[in-house]
Length: 339
Image 1 (cartoon, rainbow, N blue to C red):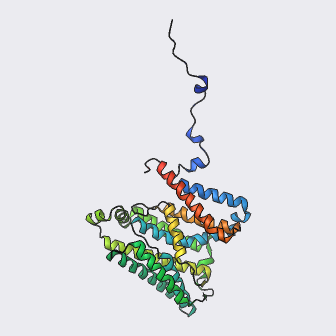
Image 2: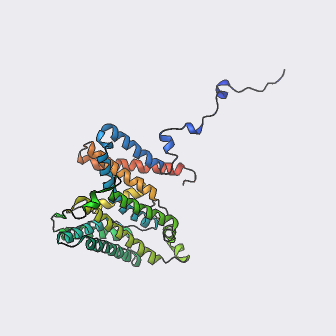
Image 3: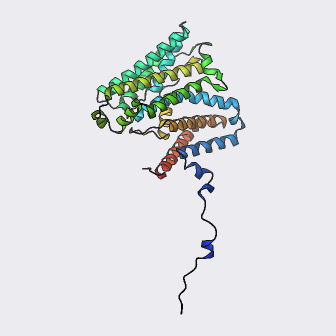
């Protein structure tokens, strides 16, 4: 009796193996860098567009761009600082102080260029003080800058004396005009993000930031002047916070109590963290920060357009952020080389 080699089952042998290019939709997004975050952003945008026709209107999209531009500038400075292992919870409050002081000076008749210089110098000095405290004391950056944020929120209230201060049509061009259909605020934000990205990727300053975030002791032994770098990073974060404050003032045309402050800072921190920048330092990405900022802006806009009760807005926003963080982390770990 002869033995026969078993033949493959027709069901098994039928047809070629599935082609990877046939993978479509959400699964395809997950193969992109920051694919998880991008997937959540697309889902939120599509859902909102279906539920509210005005979401895709030109005026609404321009409004979203203006809103996210201020947070984007704060988030850019925070991305670089966190990559180096630092943290500054006072950037939003720094912006509030800058906004308040600038509004008072403009209201008192100061020229716009002088106010801009004073505002940026003040914000840079605040950032530098934070850097001095963090660098030359044993106080953790989280504690030092959180205390600074509370102090600065109080200073902003004192400057305004509990009143709203209008600036008329001063600086409104920056806040409301457009360049080739793109708001000036967005142009400024894009320039800041691009310069930060180039700094992180192509300059010695950026490479030093990654080294410090990875292991500060090793960075010091390799010849990096860690104290000087820290002071420069916190001063830069302060300057960008001041710029964000001036941008917000130009958009609102007035300074009011509780404008910007700690809540603005927490929004920026959320955008940076879900974008993939490590709280422990050593890893940061401007692209992820951009997606995080846009997601937060789109969610806030969607909640307003859909007329969600204000009591539920924090719940919904927090839920979306949690889902985005989980999906993005899952996608990162499942990618080749993920940990």
